[in-house]
Length: 263
Length: 143
Image (tube, rainbow over the protein chains, first blue to last red):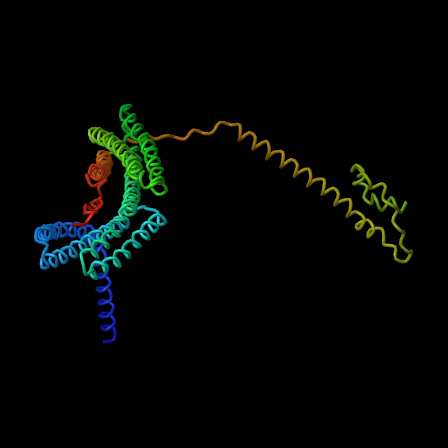
């Protein structure tokens, strides 16, 4: 009897743990979807806001002003929600990208969470606004954060891109190692040349990744007005690295095809 | 005379060459008259050191010879050409060949799948967009 009770308790604990795990995983997956959903909702609310705005500017009546205030508040609250969902999606991207150093990840997540807390406080100002001018004043505070958030966005995206590219390069290198013994068995100079070429691409990709890392440092420490230029550098280095990875993949596909023919 | 008896009690042993230092041994103290051993007794006792010396010679000589032989043996072994390993070339049976080929095919298939996965990931348009581009919201809201 006691044994049966123990089994039931153990089974229940296991089920609860599994449910909690599933919930946390699905939450992480939903963060990006939620961001898309909030953007969609924002567009809907924006059209209502635009209508109310034009009615108010046309009639300037008390009722139209009240309507305009309500729609403006809803619109600004939704804009806040979009930004909040965006930051949560960024955290999810950071968490789901393998091989990001824990220091870099923690540093980014901490910055993002500070902004999420700001948004949670800031939304209260829209809710409490009793006039259009109060709502607009609160809106200006939000708008002034744009350069800071844009920088945080570029930092985080650059970091994820660099790590993703590095991961892809490591996989390419690993596949070269796996292909090597098979290619060596077939005593064919062309095959070995392809393999050597594919291996040499790894170093070219590493050089591009290092250049992207340097550009990321300039994003972090550089001036806001140089942000786009520095992000362009990261992006172009990553693009170039990606193109080289594609070339490496083509060599590997050709190798595989030749080995298949010789088996 | 007694001293001579002490050193060479046995006439047969006199052929052994003298050991350096043995002749310089101080003359042993003569025992008292009443404690003087009989002729036969004294001959047995005094013979022991000489026998020990002889034994030492034999052991040293044998050890040296053994050591020398060992060195010669090691040197000769080191210089002698190593015996060639017999290389037996056996032709794998068709079954073994087929099994090896099948293993290689399976391995190649795995690698191919991984290459295709990597290609898909790298070619994905979202590789850089990440589904999380900066929000396209209005950054100036006013009437």
